[in-house]
Image (cartoon, rainbow, N blue to C red):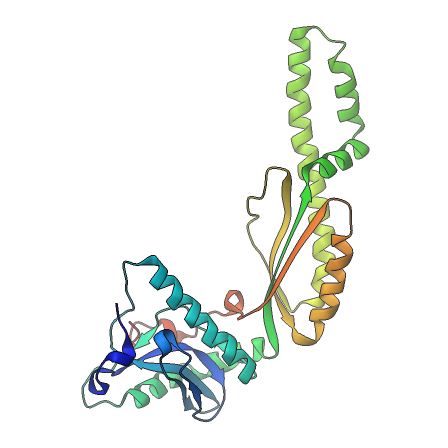
Length: 279
């Protein structure tokens, strides 16, 4: 297990990077990092990397609880940074910049790293400034969904009524047709509700990513799963719109956030370029 704060200062030539903030100065943020590391910023131009000093090795542990704690501490730094700075590009867990030579200053290396792709960083910051990520997941009780299908489908109603009057052989065929028709009609209704919900949500968002629907409890079906980039001033009205949906019979709404906008941040080339000192 790596604990950067317990290493000798001369060994801590790496810089663990939490994210990139819109800020043109160096700021000490406190002992809020992984394992209580001292977190501060290294600025270049109008942007600053949020870092702590560490060894030039990845954080590794066979203890899943330790890794989970590190990830939560990483997230906590980003949450606090979002409160302090106007915009923050969040990086995932365990991005470490290392020096190539002993004579190199780690701070200069980080500044050069930022310099590599300054226009792209500026573009991303502009996109996410004063905006956060929110997750919207909406499900419906299966019974309510099926009742809605029955009300809309004359074909299903007639098949159901006809099953009892058929011979066992024909009844089996009718049941097979009924199940296939139910599936088709359910998919049609779910798609219709998806489109309706999407249209209601879209005006209050800057950008939407449609995520894959997740499995829910057996009695529920997920209708829509969205990651949304939302301007801070529109969060309340978006919440009010979702409240109206949650009041519909059988509907359940999960609305969570604000989160760092991971889903809407394409990493700058400076972060993914093989020529950089990221480990």
